Length: 436
Image (cartoon, rainbow, N blue to C red; front, side, top):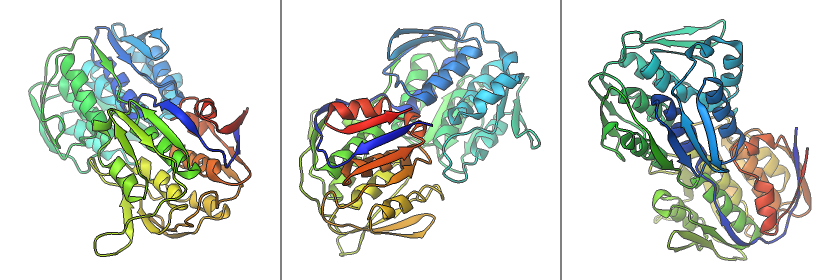
């Protein structure tokens, strides 16, 4: 288990470019299973979750050819579908949350799929009902083998288009059903679909491959199935969660940094939400400049009530951002309520922030009240263990802004979502040592 040793209190300065979007990468890489033709994807982040998914596709027989460090051509013209019945497949798929999105492509193209209960962050219940109910709507047979914790989906006669109203606007569930419906017979209508930028990107890639999709960017999609899809070239958006992470790091350390080519049009309300937290962000073309601030003050609502940041489906704040907002709020002047609606275990890392001197009241599994200290570097160092990707980056942000030297264990969790984060931050002036 690897560890970060972080010497806090150092200002960052310079320009940094954000990696390609992790969540989009997992979606579009799974989509390469839909076609026999070559598909080239650029701006791929070099992170463990993506590497593991690419390895899983390679084991399935997909040809993998990296032409640059962030550009890869996938060709699924010789897939060994029987590999899904092996212990090797089950073991690898179980360790990766993103493996759930191979269901749609495999069932649509090969008529069957098997998936073990996937891994990922331990942030509370993460049900998969939306995926399987949708596949059943399209005509697939579904079975859950409880003793082995394995999901089995079969559609030997192919999938058939259908109207469906999703029980929740699940991002991965929507992605799975879009991919499956692209090769189904007839027209599929998906209402209450997720419409995040990465879902829009998946749709654009599929359209470039020959899919027929209307309503991109809305929560009502109509997909007319086609008999086959071709190849294309696709470039990933910058990762909006990493954009938010770097903004948080600049705020906590009182630093001035420029975030290069962030995809401003795809960030939604995130920049404005940071402004409500008191940060004077400047947008310069497609860059965001975080100026040096000795402090920042939280706004209140118009009626004077306490500012609340809550996660919501797009274009609301992503739940992945709330851990960052929480830690940044500890140094603001004023009080904030953080309401994490989606996952009941995502706020449990705040005990470590309290150990560092943060004034936080954990009201219940979903809500935390933060009373900002109003001064930078009021936190002090401590030892921590990262429970998941987003809590881990929040701990790193806290350690960068704290007095003294902190240790963060289990940083493999951070590596799942952030590419060589220690090296990149050290180039900006941070002092982080990785101990293997």
